[in-house]
Image 1 (tube, rainbow, N blue to C red):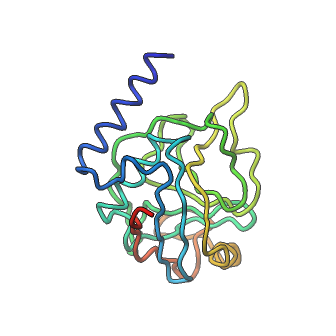
Image 2: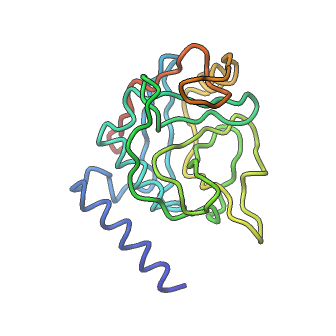
Length: 195
């Protein structure tokens, strides 16, 4: 266990060093503004529960990597996923894989933000999702990894309701279903000044 915490500390330290303090390392609850073409969401992140995930997410934010990306998967009553596809429906370059922190006590409840991943537990990179309902099936259990929740929407819940109501279809370019018919664009992600 001690070794695991040492590895986590090194990962967090390297992410912070790479951004020269831009990630507000002393702020336990940084806030990010996500301006979309449906309105603006403000999310408060929880570094006390998910330090590795928060720093990975903030690295993409401060590098402008989320700007002009799509919410490319919306399943009403479930999740709205984004952060990995540009407005031309091309995948964005993925960074390093993020250690799964799903056992942090935060749950996939409506209005929370969490990391998307493949089946492998530590395969999350840049994509994230908003829970559009309480999704207990995405939480960890004693025998399986869950999906890491690392914050919650504190302003702009009406934008989530708009996301929940968008019409979706199978998209030939991406070759998967649940893609909004009218693109839902994350125009700008910005780390807000420390309070």
